Length: 143
Length: 70
Image (tube, rainbow over all chains, first blue to last red; front, side, top):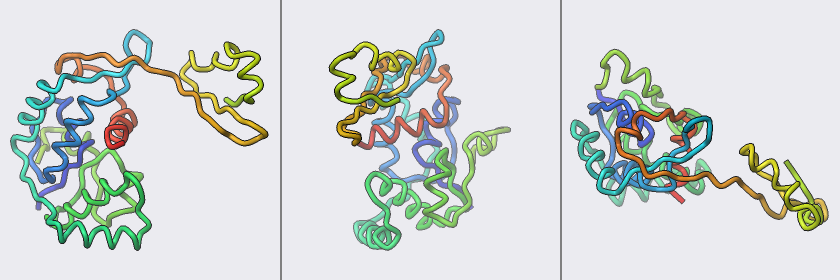
């Protein structure tokens, strides 16, 4: 059984220069690109907080490389409508719908676990086991 | 940190001082919060190699994903 990797896991993979195997949905590519080229990721440079981002050209190339071994499983329009109805029942609001749909895709693909940095939100949305990318990617365990 | 609208009008530099250490300031009027002033963080365009080499916490990555969804 394969694992589902969300956007946070794929960004961790990029930072570790890994091309993990697993499943995600096409929308993760957009989130990956958007995060790398957006307002930037906070880091420390010589003791000062800075945000870092990369150019659109580099982000597109990074996406192609990082997702090269990924299998994409997407939600149909009917799947999304059904997920939205379940989201209503669970009171999922605002931007949390993106993570909710990641869970729906992972369940549709019958993944064994979700690899994510976001345990706090995902734990309330799915019964699938959650795995930290550091643990998943350690000792070459990229699949 | 918190300050009233009157304090902001009379002592803007003093009210803004926490921003230099990365803290935000909530402005209140008649005891109710009406605004939040947050520190601006410089964004650098870097190479992919520099980006991958930088220390980035899990929280920083999650926050950037959230901001990209706005």
